[in-house]
Image (cartoon, rainbow over all chains, first blue to last red; front, side):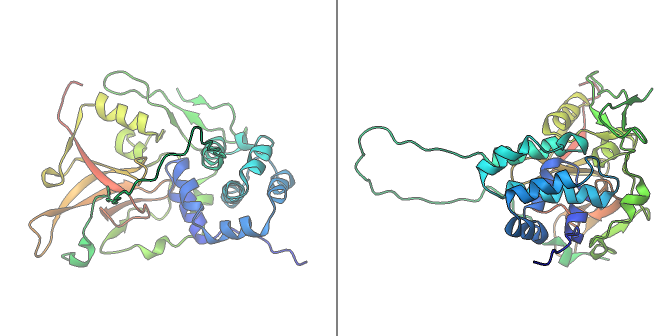
Length: 145
Length: 175
């Protein structure tokens, strides 16, 4: 099978360049197509092996971006795999590695729901959704030069 | 004197400096020296989609030593830790009060929080723009985009998506 070399996408580069927080990197890289590709085409162990095949400390910004991409890709894999592998990754060797690892752990933590007690009779309910976001009008189209 | 941060590269170690709020609480910060501004400037991005008239880049290259909060609250000296706890402490300790969009004026601070309420960006309002057909002025903001450049931009023209702005003015001379 031909191995495809993964390079940081312009989007991933931009996310890391403009990031002020690790959560920004974590949230936005989960939407990146190359990160999705890594998650879809690599096993969890392959991703962990990628880290062991590379120096712990990135020597360039591209290497830093790739570490974030592979770490976020691992967070998109099975939660048990993530928990098993994350402790062996050198997250302390690059900025925000530990923080992103913790964010990913919180996101991937498996949740077990146990129902206790007799079943309750179903009741008809009316549900509604409401937006808590603040609407910001598109002022750009009305920009006065 | 700048203090070396222990787990950074021995070649160009990151450092932190003593920085305090008006009330005297320590502001956590880090000066990033590990990767040079030249390396950051070589990154291929799509930021060229931003430009006049909504965005003006104030320099060709960015600077990894300070971040947006370092510009807003630290006079470009360092990267201020970008947690909600830290930013809210600075706002409170330095005597900032929230103002409404209608009250905003030049010199106010703008803080952007994402859909989860996490603060992702900050800047300083430098101009209130008039818009045809609107009974309101729109802020133009001076901010720094992470490790990248300083810009002056329309308050919504920036790479931080799904964020909501809040505005603050230093009204209390004593916290």
